[in-house]
Length: 183
Image 1 (spheres, rainbow, N blue to C red):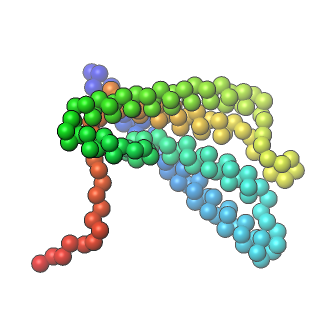
Image 2: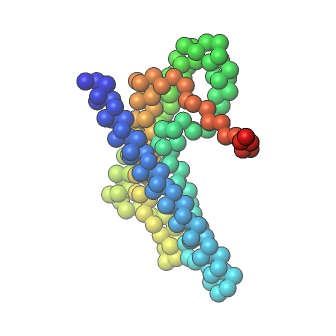
Image 3: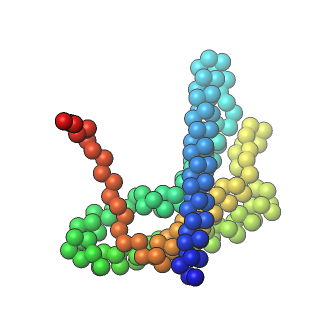
């Protein structure tokens, strides 16, 4: 029963991470469009798009925290695990335990960030504070705080699932440098 529940929770968390990653990718595409429109408007019409600077700031935060959980899910979070890869050949159980400890510490940090950001989201929701230049471009703070809190919370859940299910070692991806000749 516990295994079924963990599998179900893992499936939901994985789907949410994939959907959030797709939303982050759409933010990237939107940012590309906005930057191109701004460049063309500056060059052709000598009239830059108002709020481009603020939109870029907002988009970068959205992109990072929307894609964070999926990066954790597929074990592509930037970290130096060269030592663990070397140690795995000699001591696979020790390496597995070290990976679980690293994932547990990561879950704690993600949980703390989510715990700190959620009250800030609620405060920004209530006060409707905004950033930007009034009269030029303004946007509310609460979506940024919500994306940070939810991205970190989902990452925390995925790290916890990795600790509980004891995922031993991520598979290394090897891409061939050139195509093998066929005979």
